[in-house]
Image 1 (spheres, helix red, strand yellow):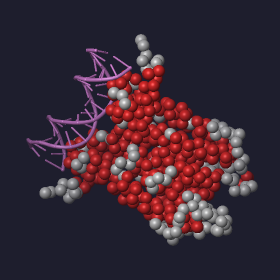
Image 2 (tube, helix red, strand yellow):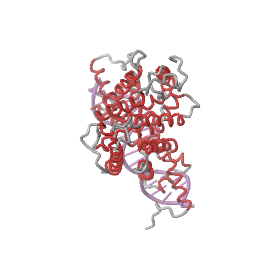
Image 3 (tube, rainbow over the protein chains, first blue to last red):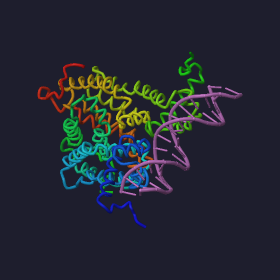
Image 4 (cartoon, rainbow over the protein chains, first blue to last red):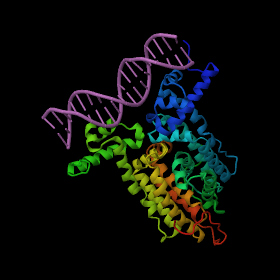
Length: 222
Length: 222
DNA sequence: GTCTATAGAAGGATAGAC
DNA sequence: GTCTATCCTTCTATAGAC
């Protein structure tokens, strides 16, 4: 039994690449159900039949995109380190997320489409891997707060707000640009704005270390 | 020529209501292309043919939902008033938006789906009405900043951040709940968190009225 | 590995009886 | 106003020649 699905030749690897690239274009704007193989074939410059030679089905194609997405999607949050200075560490995370929104808007929209549709293909991932990662980093933030190195914020909702504000520039890109007007690049101002927003919320106000009430049971990494 | 599309009897008005309700369910999670008349008919408890008796087409149904949505969607921003105390006025806006995310999550997702798909049916609205409203309120915020009653923030990106953080609890509801864990209502903590976040970013630090650099050309409501 | 052809199902919309 | 039946298009996926 030969397995034509593993790239064996250069042309195969290249075609699989081209197909995924085209599929990302279409799935990210149309959603899974809204996308058609015809659209993807046209975008890839291949015949519809050829698509199905490389990927068994529409579902397979979509799954391949999601796997590749999740590989890199969480890197910025994973990189948040206990070693750094708390405010700077979180602001660096905000900056990286905004960069990802700028450089990989289609990946962000692919993800957003999935969640909007009830996350049918990602529930498992979110409830296990993503949740564990959030718990770990929320505990780190809670520790920083307890140490008085960060203003008291709800760690998990802080993470939600970072996701929401940064991904907004990818997922709602059309709206942002229409509201700002033509010819204005949203990202430089967005970067300055988000840095100021989160810096203001995170910077401890003064030596009130003991007066700060911990918002979550942060006794260590979960 | 009789116009059966205008509700003349109680039963017609009621059926049109039932259909829109079902259509909102389906369109908001599947997007326009992903939704099918069969799904909507099943959700409404009517036959597919009956749907098409009340609405000419799938497109008509969707348009009716969008019109109704836009009617109420902008009310909270419109309500932001020059009369109130600036920080309180903006925090009230945040609170109202979060309430809308909680009470009308399907409407929020319907909107998000449209934008994600490139806003093909709303470009006009966004580029004219929404843009004008944002300009007007951004000018108000800029004036408040110039008067030293608000910390210096980018007015338009502030509005984007409010949209992003509040709508996140509707559009990404599935993810939020999976990450928080079962049985935890996200909204009370979200309310406290967002109020603290924006209060910290908006509260002027001290009597630095003249040192504050205006971020946008805010010489009056545009 | 690529192409034409087509099966088989699903989807949007219409016809016409009652 | 509602129902059954149906048309036509689109869509996924497969068959089989080359």
